[in-house]
Length: 298
Image (cartoon, rainbow, N blue to C red):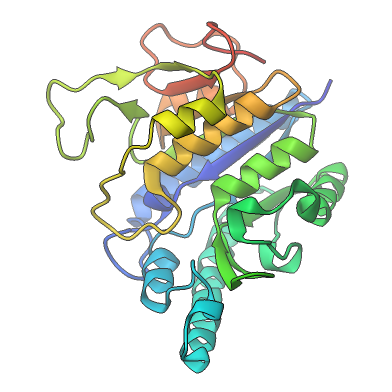
């Protein structure tokens, strides 16, 4: 049976999040996309399929903060300023997405961009019912059936309550898992190996990587475990805490065998996890979310 792997290329992996509209260093971006191309070929050879989602990083988060686009223009008096910001962030995101797709095409990956703004209008952002994403899922399914790799991204979209908002790539991944039963793994590629006891960018020594998180009752967890995510750069989509929240929801709400993984770009572990390798190295450095006590559940 054909399986689908959804891979999110985080904004921290493809851009310099401390700047504005700046890509990651050429050597790093090239190495990451080389690995994605290899993963695509391996999955295709095994009869499986790949969906890519990429973050916005420096092409979206600073702009969203400046123009307050997460809250939407319905809460801002100066509508002209909001419209200017919305048009600006959309232009920035198109530049980023076009670069990613062009680089993939150059590596013989038949990637087709799918901008979420064209397929969904949210209803108070995170509260949007899954049914509003049916058109997006249908187009992704159509592209997959033809042999393409759909490439979606975090986006500024229209919202029926806020006017506009920021739809994160994490939410997009979650909604696709709800609508595409063939999805067996969601992979978050970022600039750290996974979830640590402490922020690894602040405390690199004597820090522990959490390799496995067994997902329980999501509602209870989110009510009793409200932790602040201390970000050093703008991230309107929740940073690492957002990844954890949506990874847990993907696994918990799935009616099928699905796991979610956070890992670092460019590593052998990342390639193994993207290609559904059945047996990982004993010292694999990543964080895996599953419903049961097994590290892999697919």
